[in-house]
Length: 182
Image (tube, helix red, strand yellow):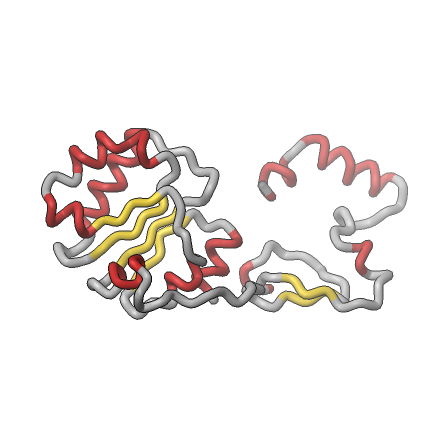
């Protein structure tokens, strides 16, 4: 998104227009906050952000997330996670899988994990790809290693806290990244 904005001819024209009228620098993102005396908490880390000058009343504090209900030992998902080393995969709520995506991801997960590793995979439209899942996850013992769901009913941050979760494959979105960082 940032590259698209910064290389957009309209953005370049706007910056040029600003400069020709004596307004130096890029757009004053967040400048509206400078006038406020209230301190603003933002999620983010300076080391991970695009270079930006923030007003003194804006601070980056890493992940800012609400506390959530921990997994319960009686919860079905918790019991499944207790079964062994687990990789969690979530490509975001709006990622639209194709049959090729699903097939290649399954093949990669099967080839790159041990026969005892588990995979919790949040996949939108799981039913649409059931035939691919049935083809690639060929026997019962392999199928039991995979828990593929349309939605993870508990807070993903709580899933990440489970002692058996050893890896998180995600799309790099801010929410997912900060769930993992937390």
